[in-house]
Image (cartoon, rainbow, N blue to C red):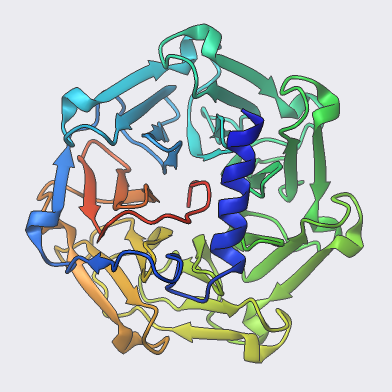
Length: 409
């Protein structure tokens, strides 16, 4: 197991440190073919197994995991990527059978062996993290472990999204109704999962009292970024942790208010890293999307670029994915009778004209919105936020060889 985690961690570092944007494949690799977004032969759909709605994915090298986002459901479903994309390739397990409170998740992350489901809300903010041993059977209760982080810090609950840096798993604070809605939880995956000493919390609102309410995170090889979402109203406070420094030391953290650089840059949901640039997906369908050059000073205006997505027919976005060349923004709600997925070509300028749209109704006429996406090295997956089908787009062939451990948003 240690060897497997190390290999994945090194792959993550190679992906984020060894290549520029759009170049996750090492020099000399087999040439990659990227699919046309409008090629319907590259799209497939599969009905959700049991839950009324899902949120995001994690990928363990074979299986793609999707937890239920419904406050009424504790279902986690997974798809065998070695099988055709149909109902028979899916398995499900109800985590509520382990603890009735375990319902309503907001994503997942993977550390090389274990899949962690991010607790969000079962009607009230939840702090119980569910961990699955990918070496075990999904339906075997002994493959699962639970830990209530809120037992250590009462505000460590109601998360939205997570990420992994090669050793630590991070859980992103959302709105938990406590007033202390900026508490990041961190797990040392080298420690015992259910041992309190393996866990730490840090309240980023101690850095800036407005730093509350986030949605998703991303890791660039050194820094972990937390995506500004909503706290009462949309905000633009990007929070960054230096993962090589002390988690509990305020000097390890930095905060930038994007609205001081571009007034409309507030309210995002999810992020993705392409090897150099970090992209933030806007919760407003009109944009703007934001892009950070991680080689520059995060606090400088020159480090940031913005692009309006007003051409998209969607009420907003939730999640972003990268396939080695293109960045995808996941649409949340239909607008004007259409539900547009957006794709940005990282080889072009970061401008509105570099985005293309694709109406998801061409594949799934009943689709009304998606919540997060995933990537398995070959295909982009979209999670239905209601009873509409899962969608899969075969984005590239062959599969990427240097992809970091996949995580939600």
